[in-house]
Length: 78
Image (cartoon, rainbow, N blue to C red; front, side, top):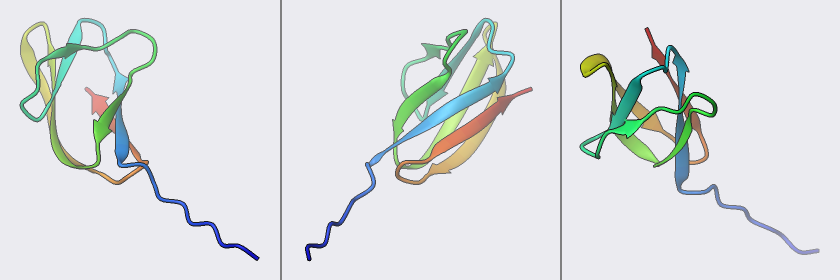
């Protein structure tokens, strides 16, 4: 009998819920990226992050998250 061990991917994801029209986001100190209208799931490295969401140039969300390997973290845009 053989044993198989599986390791979780070192990647995680963040997804955005709410009003994404005209929004962009930033992970830590990365460049601003526009939020799409359809799939709002983006791959990030596992670990702690600061997520910022901007709408029309104004900061509307700043949230500290911790993404475990293989986890998708939801960020709500108010």
